[in-house]
Length: 534
Image 1 (tube, rainbow, N blue to C red):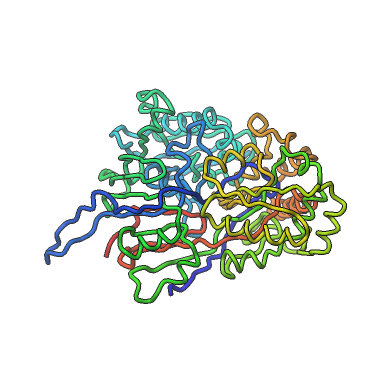
Image 2 (image 1 turned 180 degrees about the horizontal axis):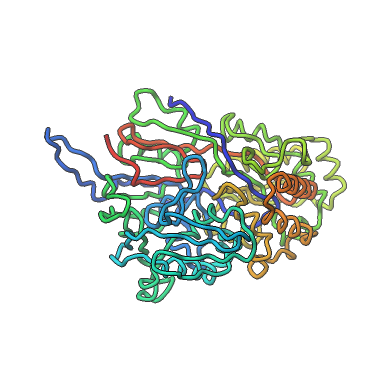
């Protein structure tokens, strides 16, 4: 059994969210070897494998993040985006932004102007050189085409300005301490302005996306596979692995059978139970680390019997034994969450400074008796085959113990995303992955930039209180003050049961023992150009 590594996870995320980011999913149950499994002969006549078949459990929500229909989801989509596109900064192994397409930056004294120096040796997959014009175009297109995700992930970005080919300036509408981290997200990818115009906009770009990344897009069969090939002219060096197939397999047993048979080489976001059952003589090993992914219950705020009944929500909150979830889903690993913040970041609230609602079955029954619950069967939507489905089944039994009827509704990604965005399911259980180590995109749902894309008043009472907290936290520079503001906001959320944080997860990755450079990431990063075969 591979020794587990639990890094100190740095993450800070707001509770009270509807828009978020997520998940696991469904797809083909058949695994096929990576196409183009070419090999080269070494001096001793041995074959060196140069292909990789990566298994993921969910079909990416899209292949071009600046498209209006793209719903941001790093857990599910990073395996594609991180190969094809580059960003100005990347998160290192410790969760700190490191220069990537940008080599340096300066910030004005008031914190509102960020000037970046760009690499001068970066080319798109069609051979066109990347310049500051492409960076500004990408920012502006993200804000115009996908405002819901962009105003969240690029929080505060108001405008971009080309200074010259290798210098670009971002002007913010308000101070945003985590702006560098935000540039590491999907909304920070750099697209080609000329190619976008050539193919007629977002639809054409999504049909055959290009970036500056280590791998070029070849083809996509939705729900089955995506095929990539190495970018031999990659500015950071040609990848050792030349041919890549990303296979969509939702069935956990099939994932691991494919891995042990050699049809697949890597399973990302791997099932922890299956990892722990791997034998010493298996050709497969695994790695794990503490995760910035938090699992939450979100409520359907369009349902008046949920939105207007705090006692019902409190009954649900009090009836959940989170220890059972850790045991049943993560086999005793992970960490229980009382608030929607993964501890460890300097501005995470200190324990004892915020309200906690403990498991209390009798209190749950009392809340339920005071509620307007009429005995109806409440539905919990989850992604088919995800760990959230396991969690929902456990929650279903716990709520039944206090008299709340629940049906677990497994569904595909599209159905689930529609329910999440429209808040049309009574409840959803989902994974929210923090994509930077400060304020995550869910929290940004409450900032002033989101007024046109997130109708707060339709979902939350006291929305002005929430927005006021967020506005203060988002720009506060003093960590101690920020920490206390966060503690107060978390308490407000728990006392109103706007969401129910359940646990912080563990990220695991299973892979062929001959594959070098593999490591689990707390933010689900996976860069194939760092890998090679022994």
